[in-house]
Image 1 (cartoon, rainbow, N blue to C red):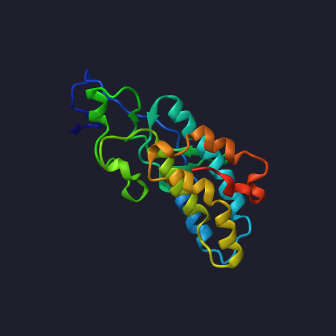
Image 2 (cartoon, rainbow, N blue to C red):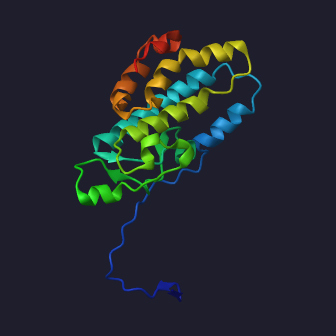
Image 3 (cartoon, one colour):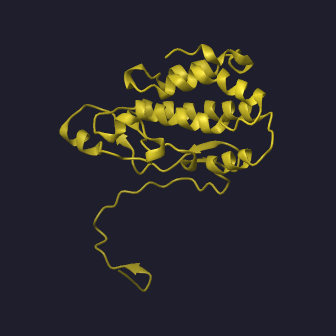
Length: 198
């Protein structure tokens, strides 16, 4: 209850909260919707690749902290005023540490947004590879609109890396650092993206 602008709860009770930077620019879902509204956008693949490189760096950092985001999706990826990419909504983050009882309890079944969930996320037996699966889906929807033959050809240039992120077997999915290395290869944008391994 709030009375006179003050909380009537016991002020000695600690609360856990996450304070994040305010991002008033659009999120990635808005960017995708805008791109889908264009008849033809020859810069879409390159811009998508640039965004994915930044996004994979952020996810690599999250994983280096032994955390799993579990709810990566375009609506949770924001553009800051300076153009930087920000991963938001850490409300479902869990520890990717040892499989003790407390950690297993934190890995709840079905945590996340269904349309971006890895198949194994429906159980409580998963690891950070669920974030890689979500990244594969995000990359796919960023470059998906295929109205012309050229656009169809361009998406298949990226199929190797996308397949490696969407692999149904988590142990065969690449780690964030491996994806980052492939995306940063100078020849990736020139059409050799299909050489990614599964």
